[in-house]
Structures are given as structure tokens and as C-alpha cells.
Image 1 (cartoon, rainbow, N blue to C red):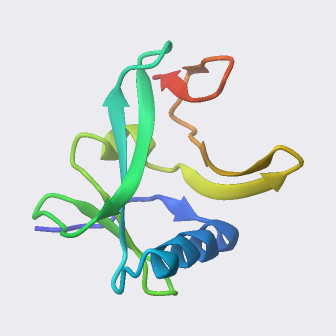
Image 2: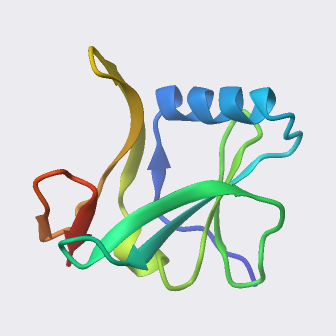
Image 3: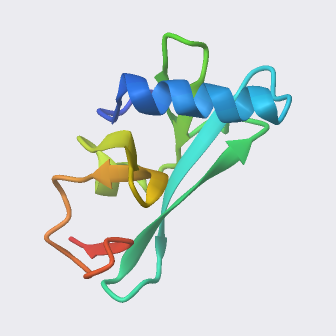
Length: 113
């Protein structure tokens, strides 16, 4: 049974996800956001388009038609987090502001709870 999770996607990030999906010809985009073991602080984020939603996924439906799927393992680690897209002089990229992260590494790509 699918349910929702408290995971926020900013309008800027939602627009960028939709733009990338359109460029790749993905009609009904599902962006899978996961937490995986690794990185110098214990966990790291992984994101990519998926073709299906599983029964235990937590779903966030965006207004622009994009769905965010978060697996059962990852949901407790990123509940309450905010996915954003930031553009600066170094380029652009997705960031996750996670209130559950007790520590993060210097490069910002991994965290611990």
C-alpha cells in the first residue's frame, strides 16, 4: 500500500526535474530519491528516474505531474527534507536540506543521523 511522506520539493527543483524528464523524452516522470550506505559520513543520497513505483514506496505528487518515489528504507532518513535546485557561479545542482542529518561531510554529499 503506497503512502505519502513529508518530503518537500521546491518549485525550482520541480521545474528542473520536469525539464530534464522532457529532454530525455520521459512522459510520466518518476524520480526515485534514495538514501544508500556510503560516503565519508555513513549515508549518501541517490536520485534517478525510474519506470515503476513499488507497493511500499512513499509518493510525493508534484503539481507539474512529476512523482517522487522514496523507498521504505530511505523514508525515515529523509522525512521532512527539502529537495532544491541551486544555480550559482559554479553551475547548478540539486541539494537536499535534511533535518535528520546530525552530521555531514565537508563536501556535503554524505551525512549521518
